[in-house]
Length: 444
Ligand code: ADP
Ligand code: ZN
Picture 1: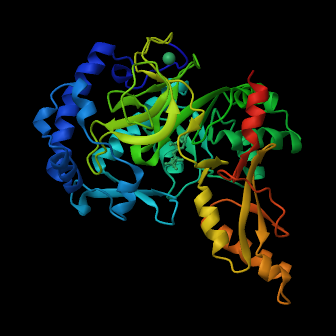
Picture 2 (picture 1 turned 120 degrees about the vertical axis):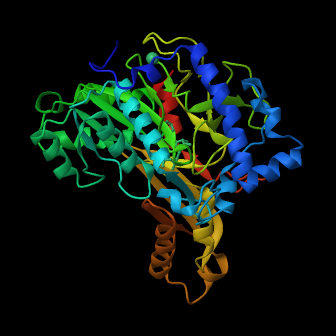
Picture 3 (picture 1 turned 180 degrees about the horizontal axis):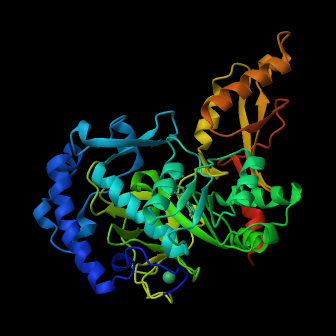
């Protein structure tokens, strides 16, 4: 055994590849039938494609199943593609959407149990033991991070400090007073915390007792990992998930830190070419597609994540056979993740256009010093700029308010004279992600 002292659900964690495949096949066949019988959307899709559940008898048949996409969930707002009576739902979560319609996900009691088990394994595989003190600084609420990391720690038998996000001074005091073992938060907040501890006069390696960090919800570089590990003297572990697939706990790094193990008794993963939808051979880089193998409330068949990565099917040095996602560096759509929050450029554009007096040329700049920062530069409408009514202060205030209303994060807005932003003949470069520049320099 490796990393933790006590193994939680060892049977599931240490399954052999052959047993994983057998279980996946059995569950896939059953799940397809379940989704077809209980979700009208799936029945319709199958019928349109001329396939029946009985056509899916082995794992290799998975590619015949139609894809599910995020818009399918938005189109079924608010109750989603429920496969059970509404009264059997015990929890809802939601993530922000592009157009203001959130993606709602639902869970039955059994789904909550499965998620709790997955999260407990996730903590454990990363090096957390029962009895550890877990400080959970993910946001509590509709976001799956807070309650997901909370429940999993309890299932494992840890003591949870539900500090949620923010209030950094108190956060640090508790980490010191309780001698917290495990810190759960976004990697960007972990970096911020490590800086802040020094500012408050602590020596993060000496004064704290952290051994493991459970960091996820956004992409982060090996550089960032080094820096967090170095300052706290802990093991910084990557956790992957998304609300559609329960939330966090789909995949996690073991102490080998060489890819994130996907809990494959619950998730069937495929890698596809994002343009053609064609399934790629093992080991090729592409878009990750997941089928949930036992979800009751909201079955998802071949769900397209838009996340681009390589999946490695070799046995890991930790002895686990659950295939590994080599760390996620990008997405196939234009969604930005700024400090753990999903931001779509189209949301920003819509908010700007809603403000009278704002022109149509804008630029979004994301940068990172300690934390991610979002800047928006926008030209004032020419006619309004030249008119007597032009009131810069008022316009800035209105546009900022409209932006804040759609984003879950603060953006710094700057008004520009008409004609200042560069014009291109081709596709405008609206988004400048300076974090990518840093990553390129840092990772030769
Ligand atoms: P959550 O509520 O967990 O943030 P969302 O559904 O809002 O889930 O966002 C999920 C997306 O966040 C994923 O599709 C992926 O792009 C990103 N993400 C989550 N965890 C990681 C991670 N460990 N590394 C890179 N990206 C991640
Ligand atoms: Zn491993």
